[in-house]
Amino acid sequence: MINAPIEKVWTIFTDVNNWDTWQKEIVDPKINSVFKAGTTFNWKSNGLTITSTIQTVEVNKMVGWSGPAFGAFAIHTWYFSEQNGKTVIRVEESMEGWLVKILRGRFQSTLDTSIVNWLNYLKIESEKS
Image 1 (spheres, rainbow, N blue to C red):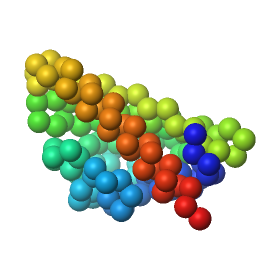
Image 2: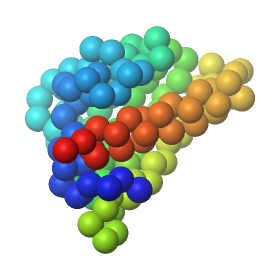
Image 3: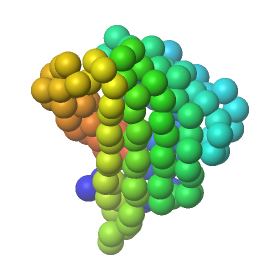
C-alpha cells in the first residue's frame, strides 16, 4: 500500500530513465522510445545486463514486460489499483531457463528480495512531497 495517488506512482514507475535515482539495485536504465507496448529498455539489476520488451500497457492499471537475462527468460507483470486514494501494487513474475533450473532456490530468493526492495523503494519515492 502506497500512500500516494495512482497517477503519481504510475508516473514514477514508468519513467524508466530515472529508475536509478530511487531504485538502488538498478544501474543505467534507458528506454529506447516512449513507454508503450513494443518498446525496449536496457537496464542492469543485481549485476545482470537486461534488455526488456514492454508487452502490455494499460495506463494506471497494468504493465507487462519480458526479456532474457543470462541463462534465463523473465516475464514481469505489475498491476496497479487504487483504494481510498492510496495505490496498491500486485506483482507477478516468472523465470525459466537452464540456469534457473540449476539454481532454482537461489533465483527464487533473489527474485523475492528484489521485488520487495523495488516496492519499498517505489513506496518511499512516491510518498515524498
